[in-house]
Image 1: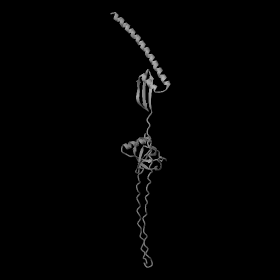
Image 2: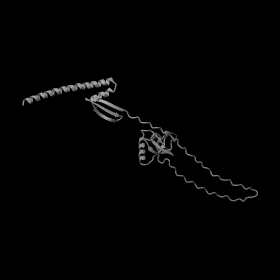
Image 3: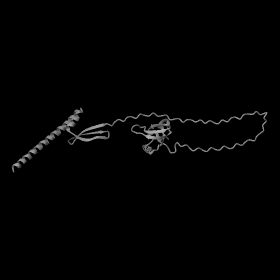
Image 4: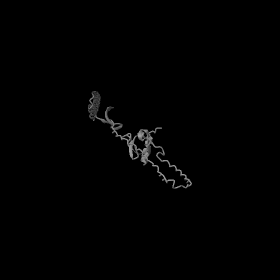
Length: 228
């Protein structure tokens, strides 16, 4: 059965173990290539946003980064050597009864030397080093500047990605017109000029109305002064 890589919960558990000073043991999966099935220890978790290979594993003398799919949590008891079985004691050899030899007729043959069997130790193959992938630089989030008109006011806001750099604040109509002039789109400029023209006409009507009301108030005040 193929060994699955680390889940999100297992990565969080490893992060907590490292924070407590422990180095969890892991086993390499088939996705790790020729080191599959070998054991290692997690020594560090780098930033996953910088590279997908953020699990730094020590095996042998090497410390190399791997992705969560390359390793899995090692089963309990993995890597421990089984207790050596006791060797059976050799049975005592029974000496054969001595038979007298006729020295003159039987040549003396030297006893053959007993050579001890040589035990060859096979060096364990060292896992090949994996090429460390260069971390891709993060591109900055997009910047959006919005000029809006609502309820007789012009506002400007700025946002980069999901972060608001400047909340909507009020600007003067002349400033809004200058901002729109930077955008060489005739339809947009005409729409802004129509809005400003409508506001100008409404302001003039209000001014005329206020001047008429002020004239009535001044006339009334003059009548009251004459009545003294």
